[in-house]
Image (cartoon, rainbow, N blue to C red):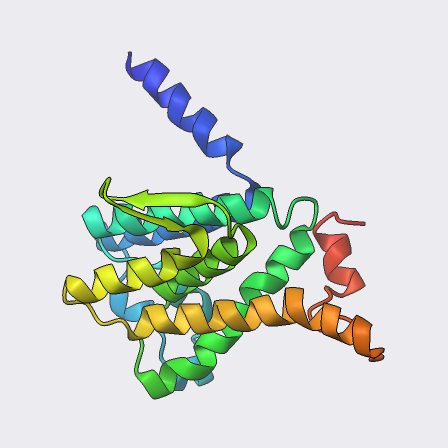
Length: 219
């Protein structure tokens, strides 16, 4: 039975598309290392001063650490895998370089605001960005929470934001993700249509460079 369960987990893991799998692996690895006291959470959080001093890994680790193994960790991993995977398998199918741009664009916005908002870990913001973009691109999908509240997918980030506020959590980090998601949605899906209609020379702002497309195997 254990072997079967192990095989099932491995099969599920390797069925996850590569970028989503990499993000999940990073989160699990960071949580495992901190749980075993091999590294400290204090070496992972975002700190602009320490980054400028050479601790550049914080630019990534601040997005990958969701805390110790707990229900909150599992909750974040669930949303990460579900909506990151849905985006990678639909909107960014065969466009891996564009998905990398999605991450870099969102992370860039969040890192710019983090010092002013005094945010240390930004993984939740990135997750909310995924929720927002997926919801906007699947506006007719019906959803339900607690078997009572029915709504369409674009309202999912708002519902989760209100739920977080109801539980007494700060909504600042989640709002940042929604803002980043809205900015990405505009530049990726709205701006190109406006530019085409008005005959602007630059038709797409977030077009991946050729070298990134080659590295991602999109050529």
